[in-house]
Length: 291
Image 1 (tube, rainbow, N blue to C red):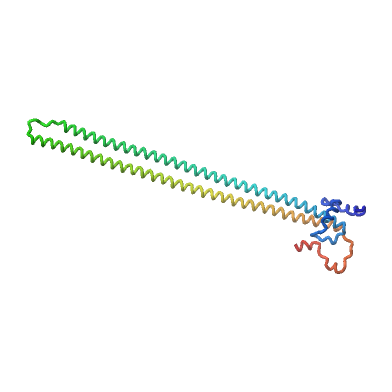
Image 2 (tube, rainbow, N blue to C red):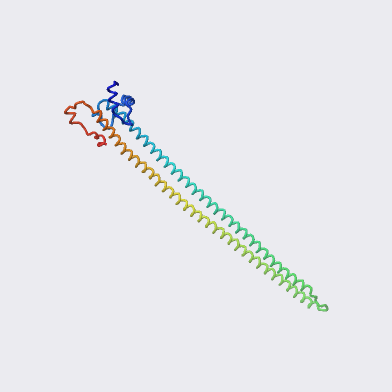
């Protein structure tokens, strides 16, 4: 580039423009898009190509930074939501384990009470039968101790012996019957104790199952709430990014136009346009209007 051209290129000043790098960029990227360069001379085209690229790079860097912020925020939100869900599941497991342990202890207590009751029934039953047996034996001993008077006839003596034997037989039968009643009563009582214990344990199982189901439903509601809040937060993060992106698009569109207008004002093409080309001249913003 000669001195006159250098002087021309140095005339345009912008933070987006470096004259040496602009020339190198122009030589590599001659196919320009967007705003029309027909109004620019050759130097202007080089300047605009390089300037436009720098503006685009700066905008892209800011957009990428906002994308990273958005993605980082969403990742953080998802990790937090996942941790919350894990806490909910862990708490649910702890609650249900506590319910299981409590039910197990309650059932053990019921079984212990049952065994104690059965043992008491057996002991009470045996004690009552022993008393019956003792009274019976005492009465038989008393009857056997009664001396049959001597001097009685064989027939009379036989009658007294028969009467005593009948009493003894009745005592034995009554005692046997009483003890049978006690055994049957004990059997019935023990059956009731077992049945009550089974029913109590079944009730505990049903209550435990119902409580676990309630806990599970509550945990599901909490996890669903976390998912809903996450979705809302992620959407908010995306909307915030879109808002920033739109603002960047708008502000950088102004930057593009401002820099383009400055370059056109200083490096306007001096070529004369034919009548046909004049008719076909388009608005500088035609590309964006079409867009």
